[in-house]
Length: 211
Image (cartoon, rainbow, N blue to C red; front, side, top):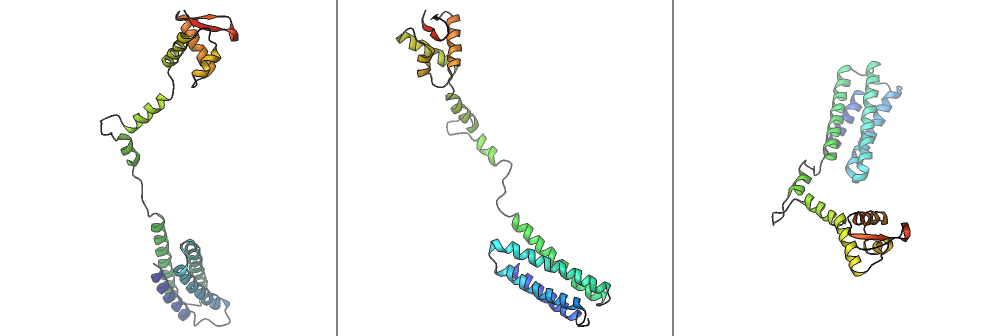
């Protein structure tokens, strides 16, 4: 891209010098066009020599110069300083160059790997060698193992009471770690209602034993 831009810029600037030669030296716009043409050449070289991080900035400066030249040429055309045919040809070439650069920039920014809709679905639907459930179900099962079920808590309570009696809620909480004392209290009340265990005392002084 850079080589094409430099060559195209050189031709455009050469044409600008030729069509502005008939403009009187006293008209400031003649020198504005030519000076901006020199700036265009410098900016085109910057695009080629800049590091990738600086290339975007150099490209923006170059495009700004091109837009300025179009404005100056239109002013010259309106003021009858240059012919309509000459102005049209140079403006067309400049607009063609602008379009080329914008297209190249767009394609470069969109390059790279593009994820498909099935990228994650394939992993979730994959089966292991033993024909077990998908990865999603495996993760769910692993997480469920970390959450103690109500029956597990009840079994732990009964097991503790088989070894010792008159245990308090705090005694149970030292062994059953993955829930609050309120949850343990609800399990104890459930077991008391079923007649499996019995409670002695009230509130925080309550102790529990097997029936």
